[in-house]
Length: 510
Image (cartoon, rainbow, N blue to C red; front, side, top):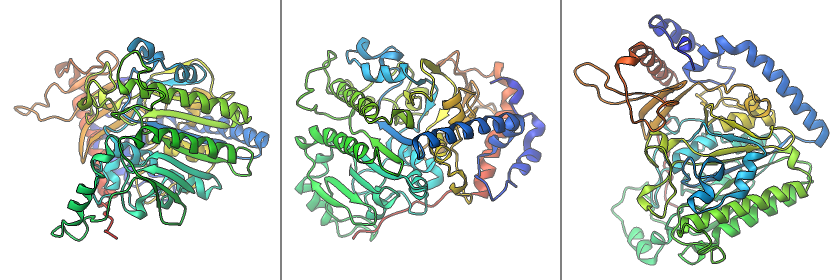
């Protein structure tokens, strides 16, 4: 983005005051959006009319709204797909994911949150995790979870008449009310964590936790659970243990549920929404059928090949059932590589990894596929954020007016970007590290929020186009941007004052 959009010194309080008086009858965006809307509103309105016509034509043709499948993988770094220079070059071929990208849109400007739980809450709510009170990765025994007061994408789509299902890694709370089938999904098959769940799920750990009688009342003291199954409105059921042996086939079981749901709902009266959150790519074991298959020689690579195989099967099934042209598939990673597991980890050519607001932690591989609707052979570097998938799903389902208006929803509608290849509506991002703002991005420029020295802000500015590894911070050449970036941050903080963050939600032990 050019310097012209950057707010000038006078932008400050006058524009911020305008933004803080936004309508309570429409989605509440973060402050920078309203300035962009002033510049682009007419163009966006025309784009919306085109999208409305296209979606109406699809609904008339298929007799129902489009199906939506969101696939979230674990800890895959930017550049790991073959189409990004990885794949076979890294000793783990990804032919099916590469084909998905060739047949659709490769999203080289897609951003997640820095770690597992934050990205999942962002996808489910369309909000930065800090707004929801759920900012940290949840480990076994942690009473934190997704507040029932949040409105998930599954709840939006369920209310719009969609059949909804969640399969895979949930990681948004242990408490019964925080689980997927109480958060808008009709059915779910899931695990609460991944990596080494059996390390937390042994009899010794259970006894130790249950006997921890000095813990505060809100602490869990219930036994940890393995594979879970849930139906909307009913209590979850443990359907199998998790241990080093059973976990090798957990993904196989998960994917079987995905395929079964697709087959059951392909010809039904309702459109469907699937959230498939893969367990793979950060485990210590491989499925027996995939053990040693990857030339790279790691379990991580074996799992990448297993996952790629499943993606190929899913796409073939959508075509076989005749619903591919009425189904949006978005494949994405939840954060960068977890180098703590190296060499049993993914990799990125960018600097940083899981847990960082550096590009290596938050810039992730992603692909959007919708035959006959999303044009083939597209590679895009424009910014999208995981929260955008929330609002985009609402638009495709025709329920934008159901998005909550009493809170900030950070997701932007990117349906025109995906379906008509118009410019992305996202030209800014706020990168949070837990509860703290870690970086601000505007166009091609990114500012790290770091301690200054002697009253100066430090060499915290980076040109992401020229320096994607963020190795050459500059200060003097970015003098023109100091105050505008300060203004943007103040505006963002002003919206927080109007719409305060939710307090952390804690489940009580049963």
